[in-house]
Length: 494
Image 1 (tube, rainbow, N blue to C red):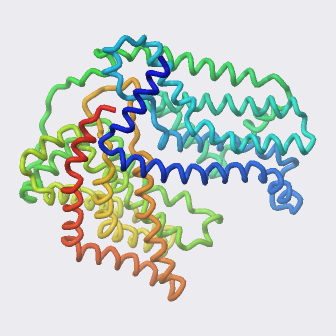
Image 2 (cartoon, rainbow, N blue to C red):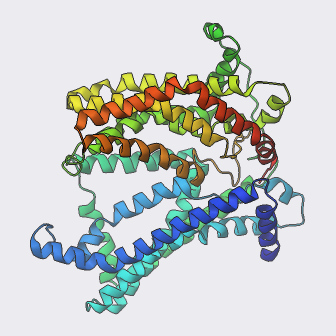
């Protein structure tokens, strides 16, 4: 049975409409994965000695490197949960065709959940914990205690894997977990409550009491058992895969008629944001990026002037990156219909561009409170906003031609659906949008002064606006060349 599932997965991969593109992306992702593995392994082997040296020099106050590691492990797992939620693929999405075949539902669920167990995200922490555990044994720590502690870390990592599955499928799990993590992080950041003082002894407990790794093993077993029974209940065509039926409502958006033909697309996008849960969440999360700069208000980043530019790009471009990064995937369910209606690509793309520009302008107004922290912070926000409007808005649309990820807006839940706001491809395309402006800033800030760096970034955005029509000619040609590949990718159900 497992062999048949693997065979189907391989066929799905090689027969994909974007096979060559996916292969190239996977090779690139594999390269970065290898770099992460090497970095984790080196950090795992060297972290004990780095902390020990810092303790001897007095730069870190701690009695033992191992105790310090255990104290902050809670944030290790919180960060792990965060990047899992953003990047880790959920189990198979092609449930409907499998339900027609002579496969037992329990086998489908076991295989799908098993795919998450053998995920790269479960193996990556091992490249830190294994070298670190070997170092502990070499440093004369109790062998039985280290083994118990190591097994406990392994079982906690796997339990987090299932917690991530729940977060991707259940709002009642997602919101409390996010609220708890953010609340604990902010309370420690501002010195209100230090959770590490209480979690450190808990992790040390697994070392001091050999055999206590059975506690996280029970937790892992419980989460796996609950996940199995939760998803097997969803494997019905009339349950998690049914379409939503709601009373139709209308909105008066006649004020958009002044935009002419563009108003049709603008109205559709606004209605999408108002009515669809995922689009609405992406909209609000985009504006939460306005607070991103507050995380850099500390001594750790005070010496890095470029952080103001970096923060400005995120604070003003949250909606641009989150919503715009999935253009035209938002229209994937009726993309074939649009392409059969002789709709000019230019009008379609311009409507998205104006929506992103309006949201960026609104975010810039909300960022005005950064004036309280200094004029340089406000200049960083303003420079980032001009760059986002003039340049990044076009780059986002250009990248959308190559990210052929369909979005299903018609189902309430998927037993094993991908509900992420972005994936590894969109993350890779995000890097050049953020690296280039920082390079431009330093090219002028280091040779002239900081103000010249801000002006250079803003000038790049202005140039993007002046040459917008030429840039859109290029983008339009790319969309036309990718038209049939995009239609084929959106037609796939896997």
